[in-house]
Picture (spheres, helix red, strand yellow):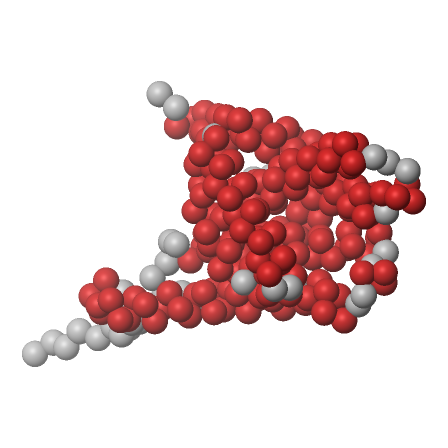
Length: 238
């Protein structure tokens, strides 16, 4: 009589039922959210401990970069976890952080600097001598730049393009993939509302879960860029 032995499947494999799958999903959400919070800890600490007057221009940019890298690592972890049965979200997060950090910093820093300068200018509108209409235009520019910057972060997490090409593709897909853009705008509005009602730290703590939703809505953009702007997509085309 021959006995066949093997690795016992984790709860959450297809044969283990909905409760097991829910357990694995909660593990993934918890690990990636914790990773996001730790990676963006400087920004969390700054929003809680420092008064607005203590945030200099350079510090704000550095804090924003740390959040962008944490978001990129979360996106990488979620992409990795979709393809495996035995999850290792903690390892996937930090592997994504190490792989994407430098590319994301180079990609998002110019946009963060622009948005920060606009925010400081608008907050000191009286001292800068600008009117309400001009301040509104500046806020509009900052809003569009923020949307493009988030998409740049997504693209930089998946592809290895030059910084200027990332920004061009992000701006191009705002109009080319409108459904994803509407979803991105809705998420941005919800984020602003959450910060308005609570605190920036709450948003950062929920960043890992928000990254899962962002990846879902940005997948058509990723597919479009891969199909039209990479060798992989060109080779797969009939």
